Image 1 (cartoon, rainbow, N blue to C red):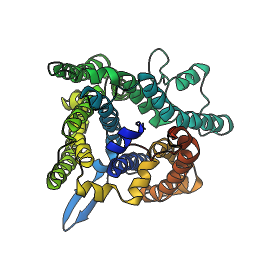
Image 2 (cartoon, rainbow, N blue to C red):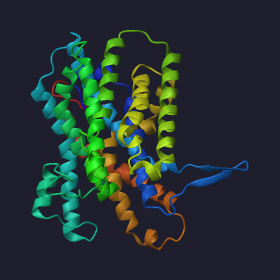
Image 3 (cartoon, rainbow, N blue to C red):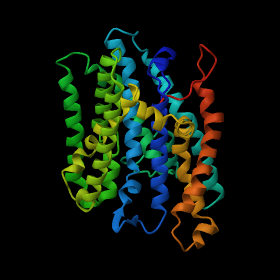
Image 4 (cartoon, helix red, strand yellow):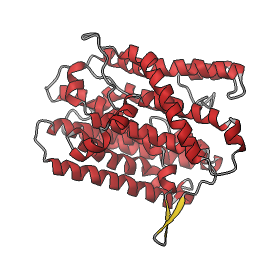
Length: 389
């Protein structure tokens, strides 16, 4: 899910804070899965005679996925928008697709191979059937007629994003003319209509199936589209000097909006899958403030730089794709250990103390030996730190 643009575009777009934001997204998803494996789920504490419920911050790990999706659209769209604005050469479609494939598949296929070995030699995973193996090789997860559940629970996002890569050049062209920009609104509406259609036809079969069907590219096309709109706006204003305090304000408003959206979704959780209106616009209320955060970071917010560019968060951003891939298998293996199976207290802190360093170690090894060789710049012979998506 991380992108590597050509050298010129990379240097123009690159911000350490955007890489750090990707690290925050991966860590948030890790935090969510550690919370899922912990009981009880309710996270409350008392302070100054008041009771605070911070459960939504843990249960909202899905926001990390939205961050990835918005960043993908934002950064990849910029190269195309500069071409449309006459500031850059036309992207070569074959090179673009090759980079996307080289970015996604090496680390994924290597992990698939290791998990298949674990399935063949341990009880951690069930070895897939021939049809399921075919589905894993070609990203055909949770779709008819196979309805294959992926071996690693986080893999559902990979085809969602990869199919967006295929659509992106066409979606960008919708913003090429002034009148054509209304077409992007139709794209956003189509995603909302699709989510409503899924609810009408599948709500009686439960939330899990609806979640699967709404988690594909069409179901997230509205969030991707907002990322593209933010990218187009950033390209239009990139040569202007924007006051740092404005960008700080935009950054703070983005985070406040994101936290408010999480709180609102948590407050209607029991009604959400029963057809609450937010079920159909959920991507928009998450992607909207996320776009503000990304734009503020891209355009030089000092606050964003201070919070997201420190060495720890930046390193997490560098290895974020592998961190995203490996944290759930690490947590699964930990959950099967004698310590966690016999532990009678609240295990979340122990999961985090064990899972974070182990996941980062696996992520670094995967990045260093699997990802990095495919990120070599053919012109300079060097590999860039990964661009955020």
